[in-house]
Length: 175
Image 1 (cartoon, rainbow, N blue to C red):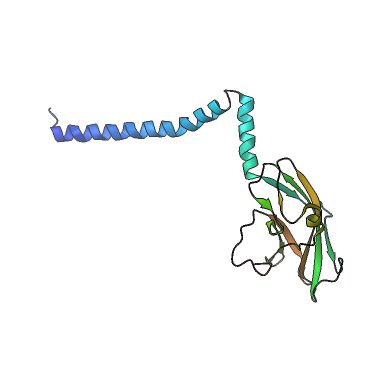
Image 2: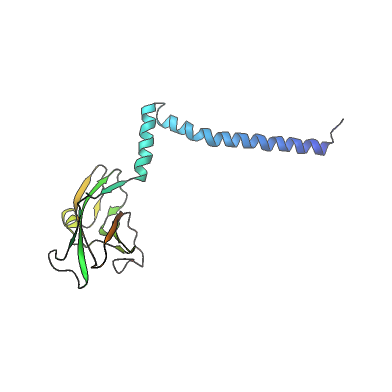
């Protein structure tokens, strides 16, 4: 039985598509492995360091608060606004990678029990000790206390740290 030329061409194109998919899939899998091995000089220790580097990229900064590091106060070098209280938080900030951006007060945000966010006051002891804008140097550790002012009936929920990008909405100290 003779297969017509158009049918042979369809089969040939089908086989070429299958071959293209196999080659593309193999390249997609093997190229990253090849790059990883060539960058590490074919050493398993260096490959582990590469894995640690990727983990550090995701965790450029480690921010910790000790278990007894949060205090509510009604006076801190002056009283808060009426109906408000101060929250003083002890922080330990470790920089794992050199930061390409400055650490400023608005990198920190206190989240209260209703989800509202507050920036620390610029008169926080942390910023008095380290200035209100400093570069995060790899391996550096910064410790101090952040001072927040929140409504009296609210409680802190969490403390966030992230790169601060100025927007037009950031004119009242919270969002």
